[in-house]
Amino acid sequence: AHFVVGRYVLNSAVAQGIPTLATNHFMPENLFSHAHVPAFLQGLARTWAYRDLARVFGRADIVTAPTPRAVQLLHDSGFPERALPVSCGIDISRYQREVTHNDRPTALFVGRLDEEKRVDEFLRALARVPAAVGEIVGDGTCRAEWEKLAHDLNITDRVRFHGFVSEDELLDAYARCDLFVMPGVAELQSLATMEAMAAGKPVIAANAMALPHLVHSGRNGWLFEPGDVNQLTQRLHTLVHDAPLRARMGAASSEIISHHALATTLERFEELYARAMGRTAPVVALAA
Image (tube, rainbow, N blue to C red):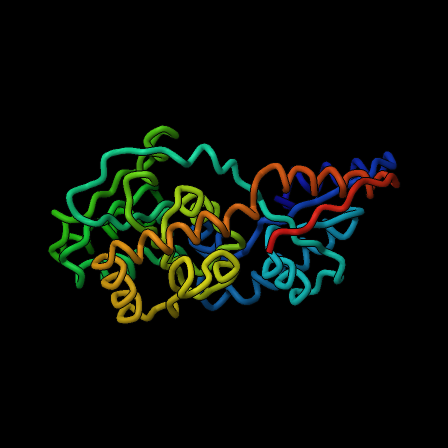
């Protein structure tokens, strides 16, 4: 992030004449719940944070963000229109494993259990689809609240909160699930969604921020409007009850994520490093 380490490193590099490349994965919304910023101050805090980011990253020779939407967000927030999209990339082969599935279709969420992830919407939809079970991997400030919600919805026998898990357990969770749900509204790319796609899973995601770059509605899953639990329930119900559709959409996820292979991302960054140093290198196509 640009607050401490990034600020110091960039200032030091510029002072020494060292070429620099900065990558932004910061969104103020991801900090509001941790910092307990009151709602009435969040607009002001967001403006200040982006202005500060522009001051710091403005000193870098090259600036990237993980998706075209993330780049547009930087530009809309006042950063000069020179940022470039470069996918985070993913080692796809790591997520391709076989495990025994649950007895009933399983919908998985992976991520921080914080306000902007909106896991409560997932739980409310799951309560209306009795044929499905849910698995939730991760921890955060809202875990206790959402565990209570699961109890109030009378679905504790169909949803499991795993908390933090080992890397091997995470890979098993992706392999074991039948579909992935990402209701978050502050995703600059969503590594968890990419990981589920690498595992060949269909995705139901909020139509927010950069998620539409990964989820092509009707092809490898569906988008739903944030807050529309009825729409999320309909999409969940359809996938839970249609195994052939899950297979087709899962295959589409595998095809889409192939354009985000880690090797492509590394090649792209090498080209940008060379550009920053005034050298030439083969240009690699950007992932959308």
